Length: 242
Ligand code: PL3
Ligand code: FE2
Ligand code: FE2
Image (cartoon, rainbow, N blue to C red; front, side, top):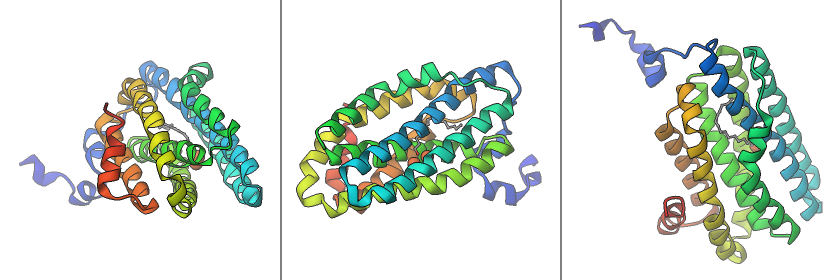
């Protein structure tokens, strides 16, 4: 009976969250979880900026374009900093730096030897797909201020994903085996980052399975676009679970 009373448009518009209701953004529990999640996002955006600038040093003819992507990341960082401030939360940056350290280390090693394939896979595919999945899920349960900011950010993240995708696509013939190898080394790190953030995300009403699902969609779509076939993609995705 009560089902008939629920407004149909609402059900169509939003999935699970509108029926569950949004979290209480003012509780200590919410703010505590947000202090880590917000820091992760701020640190991720800052490192993304640095990574695009670094990639530009390896492709001088595209440095200008990469600088533009990097500037977007700084804007994202400022936007998410404002989200934390708006909720009265102090971001735990020390936690976030540790959170990114393994992936950051792998990116730096790749950069040092001029391994563009790994650099693009780490930053433009894995990190951007991670961000896209997280932002999509967050938008459904965010406070109105953060929702608006995140909606604008996620559009840019697709541009970043596409940029890396295009480079890998154009170079696939020579970089395929390196791509598979880099994926094997780095996809497990993304999985472990997701595991580490899952409890805090849950407090924000972000469901872990939903995050994984959104990540897999962005990841698979991107590898398909780069030119890998379903079997190759399945093999690559398995690296996350073995
Ligand atoms: C690159 O443009 C951005 C890199 C950021 C990576 C963020 C990963 C996010 C994981 C946690 C999900 C929370 C989303 C909530 C936003 C305040
Ligand atoms: Fe970003
Ligand atoms: Fe980005």
